[in-house]
Image (cartoon, rainbow over all chains, first blue to last red; front, side, top):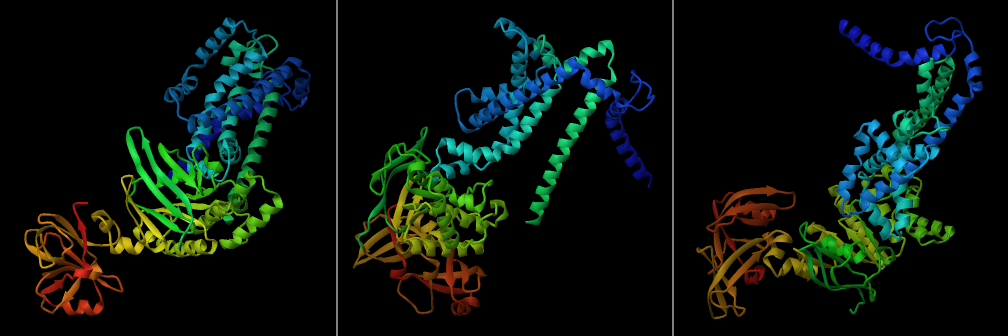
Length: 262
Length: 359
């Protein structure tokens, strides 16, 4: 009996500390006071302020553009690279596979500095373009690894079967391999998107004037004190994420139920 | 019967680096027959099949399909189709789309595809399965989809790579019969790869026995079983008692062979030389238990062990020879020897297959 109480208490504490900060954030977005310290009264004012805060909305827009574009590019490049690495043997392949892990394990600050020096060397002006390029660079390995793990689980005879039935190299990839990679591509893309969405360190080095992203903006606001409109924006993002999560799990539940029936 | 050669292999070889997997292969397969490539795993039988399908390039030699040289023609353009060991169905496509795949690649009209897929589903007894996905099917059903998917393209030759190895024993026997019926109905040439000798014997018109990338013997199942040309063939196909000995001498049309320095076997002379080494093969069902006294080829034996399979007794017996003998006996014959300690086995001339030399 005592054992059970302890167990439940433990689980409660884990979830409490995990979700308390988020809860506080949401609650204070409805606070009448400017300070995130005491809750004085309920208001929607900060949501109104948020939609009048030009620079914050601008940063949000930039973040969405950078994340979506870099996710799209890194997913396409990563998927194709994973297929090539899986399918073909060439000189130096093992080295390339090993090198893939370096951007993942290397400290972000090092990657940020190196990207900055390359852009300076190439005389590229810092801005949206360099920002997107950097995000693509650090996202690709995650997509490759995610897609590669699905590829290794595919039946290698499937490709032979497609060729045997008259499919050329393009049709083998497009009609047979690609549809089976969808789970890996989606998880790789989601990983790339979330990494890009909340990246501060690399963006700090590679963003220029006019390409401020939301994490950078919030980071800079700490110096002057965060106003509850940031809480409001975070709450909106949170609700949006939850909504997507719920959609995905409903879809998954349906799939599981369908499989269970068969 | 004069038949058309549909597949011809001329001095085909395959090597990976310095390893020769297939050596100087020559073969003619006739239209409408079932030829089985039989051999232990790693003998190169699947490699030969893949070279015919075009999935594996030849290192040297030529392959002809229906008279056309296949040099430079890729798998997608060859008029052969393969059934893979793992079936290799496309997991994301329904049964219908799996079967229709080949026709879609050939850009056939939708109406045509629909009609043909329907015919195929009927042929393999899978009507009503159109919308199912491969993982919703049993092993036997997946196998049928693989067959339909290959046959819908009307291949000149169907290549089957150990197609039954993933099925359980009962289903295996059933599919064996179904495959043979299908082949007879459609008249398509089958080239069938297996390591299961009973599958090869029951299914084939001709068996090509392989070992280490070379052809050991190409013959009908009957020929191969009754007249193996080598020790390996005798041993690999069915059960056999195999004795190796040396010709001691020949006189009056009979040859005397000494086995294990103790036992003399008398053979009909066939131009043997003194000192020549020979291998004598006797199938377990041809071992005669006898009570009649003969002048020669009688061996005293003693039962060591037996097993009963419902129809026959398999008896393992000790004698003066090094190797134990294996006999297949009917219930009546078994009853005769069951309580005897020592009994006699007679080797009849007609029951012995003699392989000359040390092959």
